[in-house]
Image 1 (tube, rainbow, N blue to C red):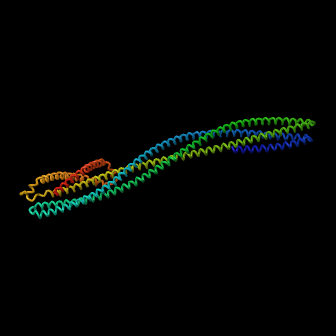
Image 2 (cartoon, rainbow, N blue to C red):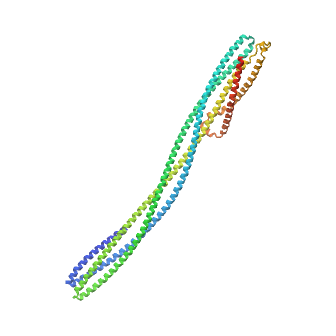
Image 3 (cartoon, rainbow, N blue to C red):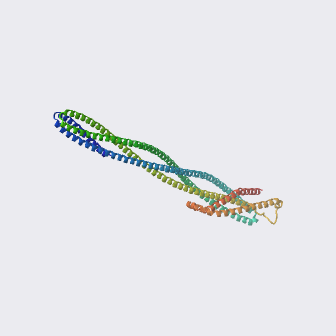
Length: 588
């Protein structure tokens, strides 16, 4: 188009140059007409030359008009091509609209998926909160453990008190030994019974030594239990630190989820803005298409006008040819009639002036056509610039779509990573809850062992006290064959002593049977405690088959604990009553 416009400009310059030359020729013709007044023959020859030159110029003008017509046809074909290109651009814009609609739908679907994923994450967060509440309950259980440790210390103090009572019993035994020695001095006849009592005291000493050993073992076991409790506390602290780390990670995940939701909202706003911009661009395209159609209509109208002007020019050229023929005929007649030369010269001058006016009008029309061509060239350039701008905007929109697709893929990958991280955290929390439950079971078993050992110790102490009192009360009178008057005079006392012996033997037998049962239970329950101590944390997690047996053992231990705790005050009360009765008998 630019080359054609440049060629048209060159041709128009040539036409203007030729028009200027025609003006100069007309001036020379006027001079020659003045000379023809003097020399008619010279003027006729000059007129013939000028007519031939005018014919050549007219032929050149006709050729140029044909060239202009061809250029107009080419311009029309170029305009048709431009219309086709615009139609293609409109089709591309419609395709882009359809793609944008599909992208909007995909974006809405992805937003719905993201909302569902956010809901799932919220449910997981609520589950994590519930687990946190469970951990708070674990902290409460830890506080209960501390209270139980305080109770253990209190019971240790009670054990020390019992040891003091044992020392008092030993002092009493020493007093009894002193009484036995006095009885030896006073009652020499009862040496055999005294030897038997000495043998019994030796046995009691051995039992006391055994009790001391058992007390030392119990103290060692208590120390071991304390160490185990410290280890459990350390494990609980470690688990609390792990839980704090998990909570921190959960908070970070919540913050990341909030940031992602904000990003999604921002991207949705950007999408809306882009859709609005695209709608505005579509409206602009519609307005441009309307303007283009109007310009095409104007161009077609102008082409029709130009064709009419060209036809008029051709008719004028034909008229000029006819007039030139007439001028030639008149010149020929002038050759025959010299007298009429002046009139013919005047007529020729008038015709030349008319032709000059026609040439001026043609120049004005040519300039008008040049202006119209310049305007059309500017409009084409503006339309090409708009097409380039629209293509740039389309490429920019495509790049933005690609960027949005990449960002959506990145968000999906991040969501997948977050889901995997949440599943890992849930597995860790599940393992921690299982290990915490195992620790609680182990602590309960240790508490049950401690209560059993404490009850066994109390029962052994009561049994020793009952045996000491029994040995003191089972001493026979000095002469079995000769009853003393005191024995004859005190039948109620003997009856009371026999009754007290029967009452003492029945609780002693019960205490012995209970002690045997407790020892059997302790010997049976020592195996799983050692197994629980030696077993590692991963084995506890993987030993799911033995969980039912553990639960049954824990239930059985709790039942025994209830039985022993409920029977402990009853036996203690019975032993205290027996001790009070023995003291009253000794005082009597």
